Image (tube, rainbow, N blue to C red; front, side, top):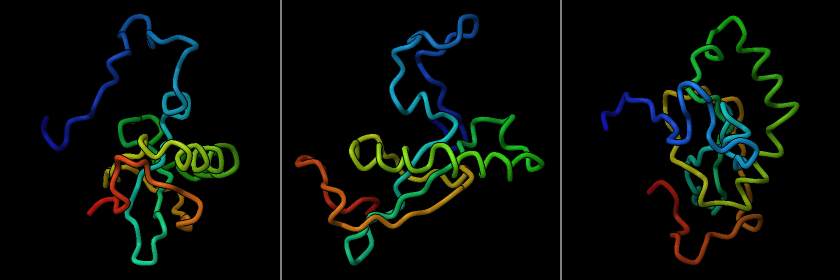
Length: 123
């Protein structure tokens, strides 16, 4: 896949929309917002970003970005960050094309890497 290609969900159908219906995972329910991993800092804190996915063209218009950010901070940020801490396997590397809404540094005591995953993220 080329670097600038947008990943399209395999469960999305052009005519009927989402094939999963009401059984969508949290990542789908939260779209176009997601939490990305930035790094694990030297002091062991997990650096996370709440982002607006670049692949959602209607929401990336600069004239409505302020309202979108406000909505995300007031309605989805806390829930998404908490979900991400409980489900570290859902975190992806930060895509530089996404719009950063908020960054958070999570203390090392609040998350535990899965046993089969390395503690260092993004190295």
